[in-house]
Length: 261
Ligand code: FPP
Image 1 (tube, rainbow, N blue to C red):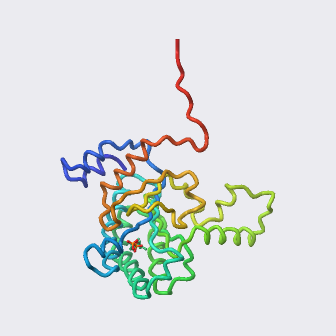
Image 2: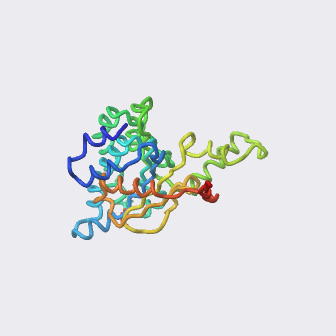
Image 3: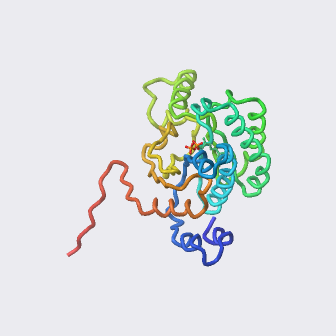
């Protein structure tokens, strides 16, 4: 993808256009992961039921998926439902699952047309059969697409993922002497995917909330006060521009400038 692809979809003269022109397309994050938070507060501010915040959050999902695809991001992972979220009232859980099914049903054709590959990470076997069926259709239909890889983290927990990986590698009979970080990564839900370079969290909370614990070891974290239902393309561009200004050292030191003469 390219600047032209992004500008074709950006109102001329808008702040989004100014930001889009500042993006360095040679230095994009390979993987962006987002903790979509603040739906409940967004609804409360409007004296609406919490589920209306989730409903409004779907527009943000659509905007962020399309912007990521146009930017040329390799992988986008959205945290839609954690293993802890089952503790929420049944009606809220039910609405979230219904929204997810409806999103897929309505958006699948667009995802496919845009060459987006849809995947789910999390304990899918614990989801209701109707939800699993809907997800399977999306995964199957987009399996051969080669553009953005769009992961939805659903019934996902970072610790659960590490436990599941350990169980799978034991079942596969991996010899402990052959085990290193690279080999362990092959048993994670995200096997074969690059680790997130950029982790975004909305609504100002400074927590990682059991999200991609293994994979975010060296991710740059960007937190915005914006509540998820208000998050749009300009916020994603803002995060990418902030990421591109970071000095990533991976535990090393910054090489000193060479002084000549
Ligand atoms: C956190 O806000 C948000 C969630 C637990 C769910 C996010 C889900 C969606 C946006 C809809 C479905 C997603 C997809 C990918 C189609 P919160 O309820 O914890 O907000 P609060 O902290 O303000 O209470």
